[in-house]
Amino acid sequence: MSYPSMRELIAALLFFILFFALVFGSRYSRLYSSEALKTEGVAEILLHERTNLNDLHDILESAGVVADRDELIWAGSILGWRNFNSGRYEIHESISYGELLSKMARGIQDPGRVLVHGSIDIGLLSQRLSRQLKTDSASIASQFTDSSAIAVELGLTGEELFARMLPNTYEMYWSSSPENVVRRIYREFNQRIVNGLADQIEASQFTLDEVLILASIVEWEARNRDEKSTISGLYINRLNRNMLLQADPTVLYALGERRRLLFEDYRFDHPYNTYLHAGLPPGPITNPDETSIRAVLNPEDHNYLFMVATPEGNHEFNRTFEEHRRSSENWRTWLREQYRIKREREEAEAYENSDS
Image (tube, rainbow, N blue to C red; front, side):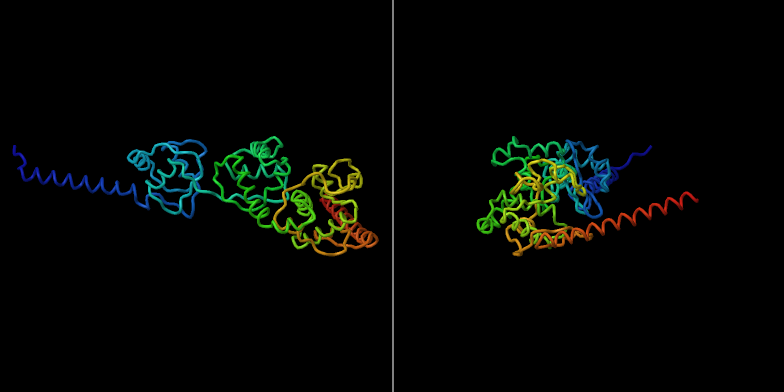
C-alpha cells in the first residue's frame, strides 16, 4: 500500500483551500451584491408586526421578490439581522441582502402616497385613510371628536378640525399614528391656506371658520369646478341681502343622506337646515378643497340669487324668482319625461320577457 507524497498532500490541501475560498467568497459577495434580490418595478413590503427571517421570505415572495430562502436566512444570520420592525418598505428592482435587511431591522421605512378626498364625511375619510395606512378607521375618527387631544390643543371642535383636512396627496409613513396623520394634514392646511391665503382671508368679509363653512357648501354643491366662484357669489348675494341661504347640501347634511330631496325634506327642523334657519349653518358640512376655499375668497361678481341643477350636472343661474321658477319647471318637465321613458322601457322589457 502506497501513501501520497508530501507534495501530493500539499497540492490537495491547496486545492481544498482554493475551492473553499472560491465557494465562500462567491457566496459572501452576495451579501452586498445589488443583484441578490430582484423584482420587476417597485415591490411594496408591508410588515404588520415584528417579523423573523423565515416569515420575511414568505412576505417577500408574495410581493413578487425573487429570493432564495436558505440564502436569505444565511445572510441574515451572518449579518446579525434576524428580526425586522413593522412598517412599509420598498424594493426598487434589485437590492443587496445587507441593504434590505439592515433597513428593515432598523425600521427605516419608505413613505407612501396617501390620498385625501374632498366632499366626504368623517366616517368616509377614516375608512379611506385606514385602507392606506396601518391604523384602523375608529382610531382616525376619534381624532375628530371635540375632546380629542389635537382638537383641544388647537382650540377647535371636531367638525372644525375635520374641515381642515385639506384634500391633497401626502407623503406619510404607513405606521404613522392617527394623531400624527391628522397633524400632517393640518400642517398642510396651515401652510397652503392660513399662510398662503392670509391676505385674502384678511380682506374677506368672513372669518376663517365662516370661509370654511361656506366653502364646504360650495364643495358639496358644485360638480363642475368652473362653477364654484359663481355659486359662491350667489350664496354671498343671498347673505348680503339677508335672504335665507337655502342651500340643498345643508338639508342633505341634516338628513345624513345624499339623495334627491323631497318637498317634505325642506321642512326638516335641524340647525343645519338653511331653508329654516338664517345665516350660515353652525359648522362645516364637509372638508372643502383649495379651489372651493379660493372661490369663497374670490367670488364671482354678479346678481344671481337663484340656481337650479341641469340634467348634465351643471347649474342654470337666475337673477329673479320668476326666472328661477321657469328654469325649475323646465327641469321638472325634463325629469318627468325621463321617468316616463324609463317606465315605458321597463314595461316593454317585462312584456317581452313574459312572451318568451
